[in-house]
Image 1 (tube, rainbow, N blue to C red):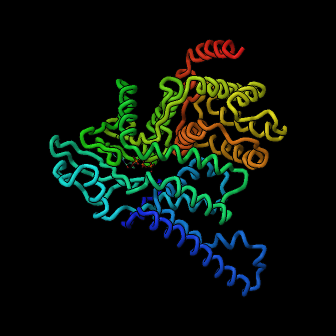
Image 2: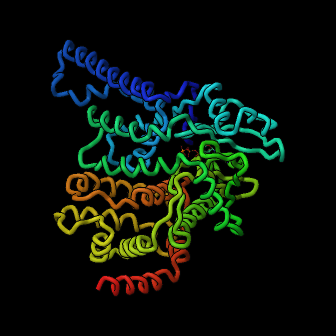
Image 3: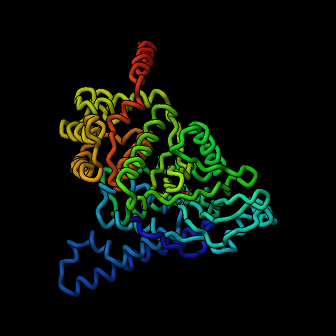
Length: 463
Ligand SMILES: Nc1ncnc2c1ncn2[C@@H]1O[C@H](COP(=O)(O)OP(=O)(O)OP(=O)(O)O)[C@@H](O)[C@H]1O
């Protein structure tokens, strides 16, 4: 089970000065912490010079960092999520722990600050729109917090997501400061192309700060999933939704992270449903909710539906990109090394100048990723026992790729890989048994023909 989220009320620093103060005090705190640790070790006779790296990461510094990142919220918390989902396998264990703690340690706005946002967004009489409104949020999100309420005019039970003040404006500078801090404290391994990750993250966060965009995305998902009983997509109360306040139908399910207690066949069904959705998003809608956070998938035992919330990170992919990506994954599933290289070059994963050691590691990790889908249809893939050896084997390739990679991964693959690996890890967490090969075939049937057709056109355009 996921650790319970600890919520603490504290003012979100919304002014530039306030933010500077927070970063400043973190840097000073880390420095002071390191100095005292250094002194303690020097006086106790250990070789302090050699231990410089670990001095920065003493227990006291770890908790200082967690505390600051949790308080800054917005960009900082998102960075924590982004890194811990995307790159947990490449981060030193201690950093991974920090980022996980940040996620489970979110703060929320005190009442007066929350009321200020609501007044600015919905007017001074905002309370009159609700017949009940719980002042303490039941969930804390990276850039907002979520309250339970009832709409006065319809008696509908709703979840009201309220954005922290000035998050949107401060993202760029927060990310810059964080990047400086991470570099300065030598927290990240070299060769991570941190700058590219930060750029993608900044663009994603800017999109996520617009709740009107999220409302649109939720409606689009409701539309494309209409008639599919396996899913329920949250509805949106348009009249009360603004750029910074999102009023949504309250979902009743529990985070799928808690579904580990359910019987095997139910867990299999949930795993199958989540993977099917993933494939459908890619090959049918070309529109994907790319945040695989477990609490964004809820399971309702009464209706046996997977309920979907949080569409802030939804994005569209071009047909050309999805075509290339389909060909790459097909090559990986078939274990076809030459085709893997060819399509990686086309997508921009490889430049063609890489050393063999890098190409080998890249192809190996792709083929490993294809294993669940390559399993024979008579035997569902057992995520409980078979996923872990795959992730370990992929992890072994990461240091090689970090060392020899000549170009950052293509922009679109950040969100796509985050979602796909998140969905696989979720199935692993559920211990689900899923016939992935069948899901893959069912959801991509006919796709190959359409790809060859459009690639012919593509080649004709180029020549
Ligand atoms: N309509 C809803 N019904 C029930 N619970 C909800 C609803 N919307 C959000 N929540 C809960 O609140 C949490 C945070 O909301 P949401 O994920 O939309 O915010 P976010 O800013 O995108 O957060 P993050 O990026 O951290 O996932 C969700 O993970 C879910 O547990």
